Each structure stands twice: as structure tokens, then as C-alpha cells.
Amino acid sequence: MAVRKLGCLMVMVVLIVGGMYGATASATKSSTAQSTKGFLDSHYKPGTFAVNVGIDLWAFSYGGLGVYPGAEFSLAQYAIENQIPFDFGLAVQGFYYTYGVNYYSYSWSFTSLGVGVFGTVHFGPKKSMPVLFEFLERVDFHVGLGLSFQNSWYTTSDPYSQEYLDSIRRRNPLGFATIGGVTYFLTDTFGIRFDGSYYGFEYGSATLCFVLKL
Image (cartoon, rainbow, N blue to C red; front, top):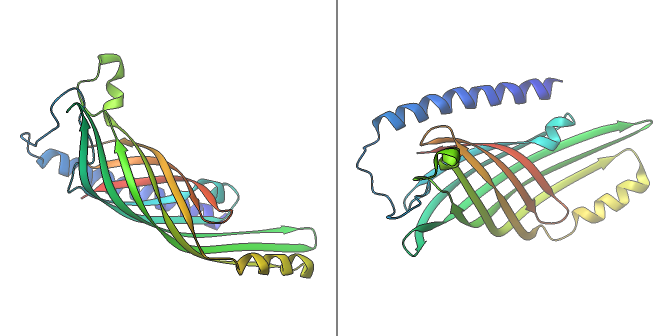
């Protein structure tokens, strides 16, 4: 219960601080900012720097804790027919995950710590949407592919299971990693994101993230 209360408090603080910053940044942003010519615009133009922090929904629902801090920098943009823009960037995502259970006379726990580096692609229909679809102007879709490094610890009171878990830990800590999800921007600079990710051997997550463009 203490972990869940801590998670709820973190969510409330991020929402309040991020919303205040986003509203201030939006109010002071110049109305003459450049945009892609054509039907669509984008949320991640070249030079955009964003930070994010996420909470693992699966771990949270079972009383565990998963925290995912990260940052991303947009490097380039390519627009199909100068109308449909795709933004390319580089992202770094860290993760800390811990979870434990007690089952009858046995106990079991898992902790993982690591980092992933990704090449990312963003697509977001930011302007000129029909009235019925105006809400999509604040939506951004993204995918990423990269490499991860992680170190994991498994412990259990069952000696037979411990032998198997130790063999897993000795496997290569390097692996391919993927991320993907959708962000809804409440302001021009602050958004809420739902991510799905995979980090190396048998480890994935569903994450609620808060994004802030600086």
C-alpha cells in the first residue's frame, strides 16, 4: 500500500508541475513559429528536447514499483510531399523495476536496473484537422528501436527455483529493445503518454508517462 501511495503522489506532483510549466510556456510562445507547409504539422520539430518519466502500470497494479526516466532530442524531419511530416530523433530511457510476492511458504522477488538507447520516429497530425477530429491535433504517435543494457536480480526461498533464476541472470545483459506509444498533449509542451516497451530478454512493460518539452 505504501508503494501505491507513493506512486499516486508522484503522479499528482508531475501533473501539477508539468501543467503549470506547460501553460506558462504555451502563453509565452511566439505565434510566428515556423511550421511544415501543408495539411499536417508535428509536435517534435528538429531541435526539440523533451524529458519524460513513467510509472509501470503492471508493477503498480500488483504492489511493485517501476520507474522510467528518459530524454529525447529531435534531429531531423522528413515530410512526404511536403505535407505529412515524420520527425526522427535519439532517445535514452532508463528503468528501475522491482516486484515481490509471497506464496504460501515461498517468497519471490525480482529487481531490474538498466538503460536503453533508441532511434525514434514521431508522427502527429497537429493542425488543420476536420472539426470532428480536432482532438487528434494534440496526439503524437511514436516508435523506437535500439539496444538495452540491464542487470537483474532474482531471489526466492525455494532453492530449486533459485538455481534456475541464477542461470537467467548470467545471460547476456545486452539486447535489442523497442518502444512505441501515443502521447496526448494537454498544452504545447506538456503531455501524457502511454508506452509499450520491450527491454532485452523476457522483459517488457506498459507505462504511463509524463512528457515535458523544454
